[in-house]
Length: 310
Image (cartoon, rainbow, N blue to C red):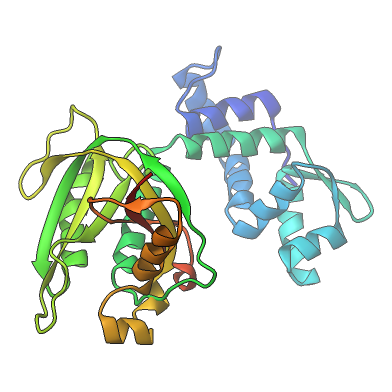
């Protein structure tokens, strides 16, 4: 059974996950420690290298847990839970305090914090999130659409901003335009923070009866120091007041309305809402934006922005 070598272990941990050598521990010392504690470190890291074991340790950040509570939280069989709990006990991450009762050790808590801090600040996390956002947008524009029941509308004011723009005209312009935008934006880190660099899209030009090709344009917010190149151009967005609702993309294009009218019913519903409200429609571009980049495929939605005035 392995236990922590408290200060020494944590010093090594910070070197591995934070890239910071703690005071009093030089690089030569770290090499010696790694050589001497290779098996111990491997055991500790292996004990956390499973989603269920991380879930168990996370549950104990709040308070000690008994076996029954852990079984309810993890939905594991008794045999499977015993296996995972024993791994964490053997590595010293958690402590068996009494019959059926477990708690997170002090070093276990420090280890989790070091891991989370390291991952939260890592390039790996930013890359994963950027890829997920990019793949989400790709999925969005390949899915069919439906209106949402009991449409909820809010009014927002979008600030003026400089945007990078990409447009494609084809049978699949959303995918084609996004491929170009992603190829330019992803290496520059522009997909990592959707609040700082919001992404909008819209038809340009709209589909027309009898024609298979139409256009789609993507915008992404950029700072003045970023210069587009190639197929990517810079534009100035004036901002303004917008009525916003959400649209379920997977089902809406399967609707009878879409088959008959050729456009999303959510646009019609939002326009009707504006006409019945204290607001008026104004000239400007309607915009589409991903509502939740981490939604399941069954819940893929867009935010539809319609320009309005008081």
